[in-house]
Image (cartoon, rainbow, N blue to C red):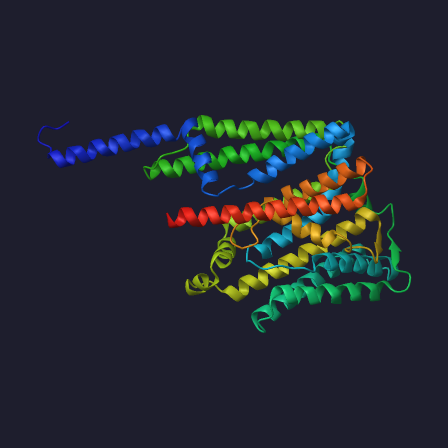
Length: 420
């Protein structure tokens, strides 16, 4: 140390050196664990509850019936996840705004009916029928946004009215027969029932998340170093990527022992990744979280709040229409029962169970994926046990109630830590 340096400057430099040393120490594995524990204690649970719940569900059902974890049973479970999972993905968009869409089930049923009427009854190409169903979904979402933005109608009321109207329209266009069978040998039906990825494609796709994590991690490290900021240790970055890659590769290997990874589930995962990127890396996504967190503050900061509501409702209804198309391909028919029953509630419950807050401003696209896997795992396990379907409703309701309670307690904890 320079002897001519003033004492206060020397003390300041020593304090900065100690702080840098502490930061480097905290960036190690012990620091990462402490950071994780602190986030959990402050109410930032993320997807921890649903991950723990899924592990518990898998253990319980595999003990009661070993067939539950059989490769082909898991493949069937993934096929079933895709249809309602895409509906739930749209629900995430409106829940992030603190709103709700109660008509996604009816919208999916109407979309299924449009496919049957235009494709089978009218003889139009299936591509035109799919396009018409998606456009109908987008227009319905725009109508909800109009009623909310211009008329001040609560989304609960607007979409509840839409639920009834769309159900009536579905029954009307299907006519007295009430059901239209789709060509079993068509590519659309084969996509929903039997098409799976070749082994080499599924293993290749399983490598990509780990590679992307490493590439993004190196880019972040470079930017932080150029700004003289602390960086995550390379061992932790590589360890996370390796753990993710090994987990995904093992899952793919195990599913390939059966029929393989369904293309339809791959479509769901692709949509989740795209929406997650849009929510986390684009101005639109940041605006969604800002409006959901505090609408007035978002408006004062220059965000076009009405446009954000319009985009969210349109995206939700369009995804519901896509889910209806996949449901028709899965069942090889368009019927009056499509989109009814527990479809609507399962789509909403999956988003909430997966970790999206009902209060708005918190959640992710992966919430829909994890939540629908939990719900379908419960349904599949109870079916294997040959138990009454009434138990499925009660257990799903209990899981949903627990998820909302956890969300409420986490929100209270975040508020208390914020005041502190």
